[in-house]
Amino acid sequence: MTTANTQQRRVVVSGGGTGIGKATAAAFAAAGDQVVILGRREEVLRAAADEIGERHGKDTIAWLAADLAEPEQVRRAVASVAEDGEVDVVVTNAGGNVAFTTDGSLEGIADGYRRNFDANVLTAVLLTEALIPHLRRPGGRIVHLSSIAAVRGPGSYGGAKAALHAYTYELAARLGADGVTANAVAPGFVGETEFFGDRATPEFVASRVDATLTGRPGRPEEIAAAIQYLASPAAAYVTGQVLHINGGTVLGR
Image (cartoon, rainbow, N blue to C red; front, side):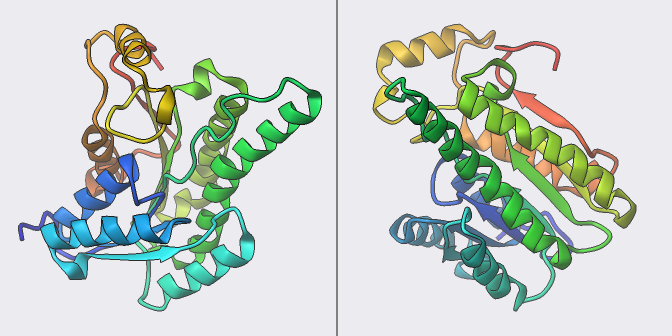
């Protein structure tokens, strides 16, 4: 195994069973880091950990199942992680647009906003807050997964991701003196994920690709590389930033 680090780091990735989260976990494992992936689906986490372990060494990857919008489950998961010592990197990737449509009623709209807030904001905030006492100082790194939706909608999902920007800024100010950085990555359209489910028809994908300047979807590995950079010593002076990676779909942010 080729390692990029002089010392193995401990990395926690939520939503690490599929898509960008899985690619991120694999990238850190390939660099020789010790990674714990979290999520709700045991079978998905186990399969991802088995695959990553086969490629990069079984000692590089572990998994824990937890609903990260539930405080007690977060508390138990973090207690288990902390048994093995300090954490160097936290990547909050759990979430997604869990309310693409509603029935149009006020009750349905309210439910959609609450579910997207729980899935995207609470999962990031609760995990991060629980891990802050265990972050390495100096040198800890926090990276939240935002979305292009934070600057262009849709409302309930985009609003939830925009809330992560404000939380990122708060963390950067709160933890900067400790040598801990906090940043966010906001991907545009990324292929090879289960994010859009059945909505990802050829026509839908073509419309998203047409909106880019590069003429192709992003790849999970490209987002993972950006996350690795923000978690690296090279980015020690980068904090309180939102890095947009969208193929030019939205310019200059």
